Amino acid sequence: MKITALQEYGMRCLLQLAEREGTKPIQIRTIAEKEGLSADYVGKILMRLRRYGFVKSVRGLNGGYVLSRIPEKISVGEALMSLSEKPVQLKHLKRDLCAQFPGNLKECVHLRACNVRKIWSIIILQVYGNLNRIPLSTLLGDETLVQSNLSEIFSSGNPAAAAPVPAAPPSRGALS
Image (tube, rainbow, N blue to C red; front, side, top):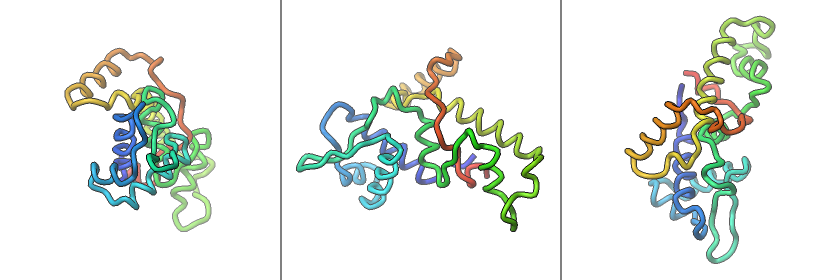
């Protein structure tokens, strides 16, 4: 599985906002400076996150961006899917997987029966099923705390920690 630059930097932007959750909005340039990114790129990332309902903008002199939900209600899987290059819906996984790999044709020759699609579907559902169990809040704190939080989530096997299934699986490049 490949994590794109957009997914990596998008998660980092979300974490910047989560760390300051409940305080004043954060400006694009502040996030850009902290993450070593251009303000233009951070702006594009935040616009995408806003379109998917993760952040909202606050206008005015002290404006900027804030999370639109508390970090406990944002799953890592949901965020990563929304940041994929070509988001598609899980309910249309068969159609969308085949649409990504048609070869030189308009439609994949294996659309009706594809044994390869079965394994990709299982992998995508398993990976994102596990990522959906991780709330953004779990990634706050130092690396030791984060590791402890993740160990607790996955050792408990608690499906109640899972967030709702997000609307978009990984992009075509995510399976390389």
